Image 1 (cartoon, rainbow, N blue to C red):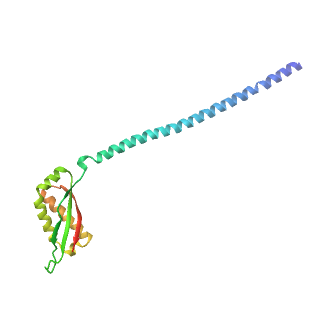
Image 2 (image 1 turned 30 degrees about the vertical axis):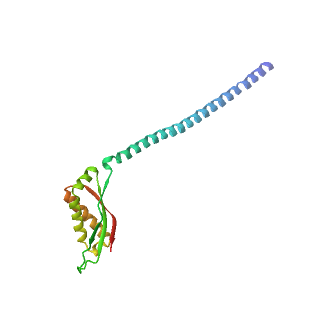
Image 3 (image 1 turned 90 degrees about the vertical axis):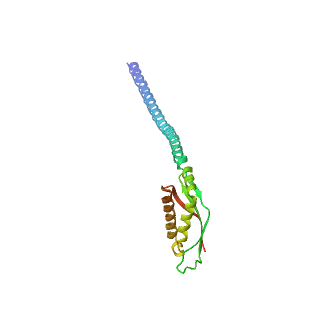
Length: 174
């Protein structure tokens, strides 16, 4: 019986090691699954973000192209410099103004339409500039008011809002 007992003890000793090996095997498989899962997650997020960024870049490029359509591009219509005597209270006319004005229009069609009103525009602008005194145009507010007056008069003369902005590229008072 001692031999049977020894064999049973040996068999009992041999059985637990396969259990330990199977537990270790399951732990390794579990760790491998977790590592693969984490790797898959990070790989997916990186590739998914890259694809989304490429899509966003294409979207941004198309948006910029939409904004820069030819009809949205403004055209500058330049006028010759104006030199006028400024009005003053004494009537001596000692001060004069030299101003170069540029008009921003919506496109080539509007520029061509303004070209047909060139003489009337020059006359209107000369009258507006010469009707102002030095006191009225020496401040920023005065210059902005003058810009608004020129803009209003030109658009009223043409009959529609062709001119979008007025730019003084030269403004000298002496």
